[in-house]
Length: 120
Image 1 (cartoon, rainbow, N blue to C red):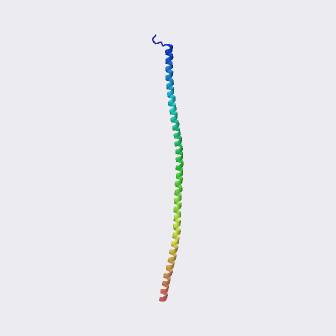
Image 2: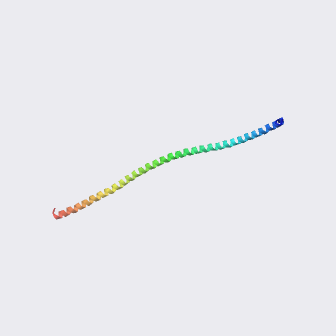
Image 3: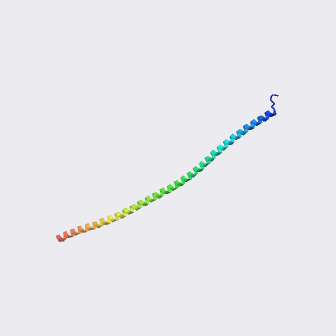
């Protein structure tokens, strides 16, 4: 009857096993709490990253709009520059035309005077 244990030994063994079980459950609960905290931190970071990504997407769209507007303004600036040059050249062309007419008039007068002297 060596395999037989007394009631007090049985109860002591049950108490020891309950203590081991309780300690294991406590360790598991602590580990679950640590994991839950890590998950909460990760969820917060994922949420923050999602907001950052959304902001970056909006900024990218705004930058593209700004780029398009800058290109349009560059084209308008070129057109305005060409119009200004045209206006500036028109005044120069008018003076050149006037000077050409005056030169032609003077040359014509000299030729007419010379022809009149010769007798034509």
